[in-house]
Amino acid sequence: MNYDQYYNLCKKSYSGEVDIEAIANFYTSPVRLYDPNFLGNEYLEIIKNLSDLITQDFDTKTDCDDDGIMVKHNNIWKFHKQISSICNLLVPHMEKNQYGCHLYVDKIYIYRTLKLTDRVSSYEWHYDNNPDEIVKTLIYLNDVDEKNSPYEYLKGPNNEGVLGVCTRKGTECWYPPPNNSRVGHLIEGLKKQGYTAQQVTGKQGAMVSFINNSIHRANPIIDGYRDVINIRVKPTMQPAPEYANPMYSTSYEHSGVVNRNPVLAWKSKI
Ligand SMILES: [Fe+2]
Image 1 (tube, rainbow, N blue to C red):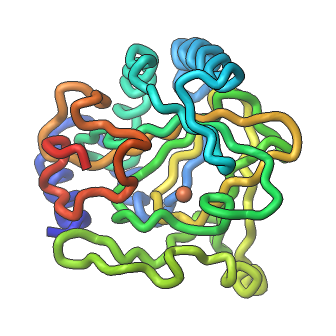
Image 2 (image 1 turned 180 degrees about the vertical axis):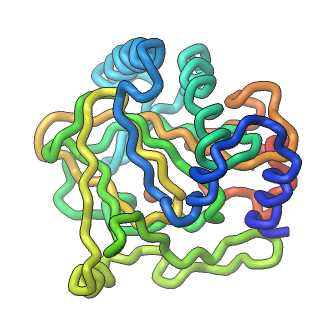
């Protein structure tokens, strides 16, 4: 089964409250931006608390790996309480207003971007090439402007995000993407056709929620630093015991590629 079919089944079996109009735009509005205040004061307090702890870890090189491209947190479950609190606010909103089905968190990354001379890895224009039904939400843990690594995405002439050609859709379709899903060589041509690149700046707690195949990139640091938590969700027919849990939510220790079979949902680590 492919992920789009599984997602349809999940929507059919879902009895929670749903904003039908917002759900209808799931694929056509693939990048959604949210103000820090969007999820309320409790959210802002948790983000501030998590940000302080993570800044401290990165500043003191505690529980992290620096590969010269990013500093990656390698012990995210020490923040289980904060992760749960954030997911309990964020994921129900996504269930109601973005997907219209049960979701669980299958991946969490906490990282700091760096100064780079050459754009490599996620600093190049790319799409992630997991199935379109996988959405990532990037939360800024500190204020971000043009100089400290704003997330950037490609916008179409309709002002919406643009999806790359996904080649991993599920058990019925799974093959390597053209050019390893790097699309930098196409951007200038697309700009001539009315496409634009949009950098996302914002205060601590600002969120970008995007279908993983939206064409995007990180920007290298010019001045300052940028810490983020990136929360990735998958549709599930049956709700998980909690949205995020080390039993089924992974980080850098596992591949970023989802399991080819969507039905396994939170029964499998990848
Ligand atoms: Fe990416």
